[in-house]
Image (cartoon, rainbow, N blue to C red; front, side):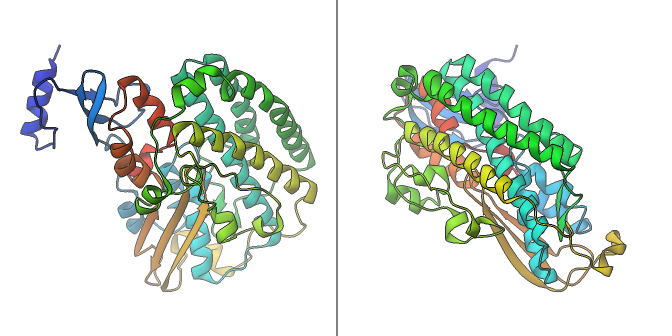
Length: 391
């Protein structure tokens, strides 16, 4: 077995930045094998059980998505970019496709817009359930975590019927969506699933979000104020937990969101508990949005644009120019900047994901002074997506 001293020596020989050790302090490698960090790690300088300093140490996943996109045809990149955030893969699909739509000058059909909006909201629900599962496990409330995993499976089954895949859907494409919805039976199943989960929210409240354990573990830790959040580029639920009412769906509306009625939950405490509660409130709002979409129903018409240039996809060319598209993901403001030189491949694609801020700069500062037992829940409260950092 390799000792900690040998690991530290090897890391320093490889040029890794490590923490200067002082008297009565020690260095702790937290992750990536630790369940709390997933494909991500932290190097912690500890004084007893308190964190003195933290360095984010990502880089354990496949990287180079943006560079690889320069060598692949426009449509092939859809299968590449959805891997930027595995729990919510429909978001990278959507922002890339929306940017290409703008470059092409396409007006996406109304039916495709309805489907895209529905898919994005379904993705938000599954992502929040995935987050709930992770937070529940880290708090030791395993029943709630198992419930979240089971309810998420219901939505994954609907995704499989719609797209043919459970996780990586490759469904939202430039010009619309890859295929139409299966029919009225699928719409009824989605409605039943939404109603089922809505009824279960009170159970989550009783066992998790209103649990004494949750308040005892999350309240008052990992605190950030509004000024800090804005300076560090914090977005999404993490920003709204500091009192800033910012949501891309409201500030820069896209798809059918201007026609939908929903609230943007805001709290002001800025601690791990506020970030958790914001996600609970937003899960309920997402279900409410899905109810509205189902009541509205999919408009008639095509589910993608009809353009003769799409007949030969490998040779499909996009006019020269640049475009930026972004959406409100569960992690925050998620965008893509796309540049075309008029060829059949992008000249450049740049993803703007929320985790690059939350999972590096923010976590390094929030962990200072935290107990070692609080590290997993503070990290989880930020809702980071490691592939977004390693892209």
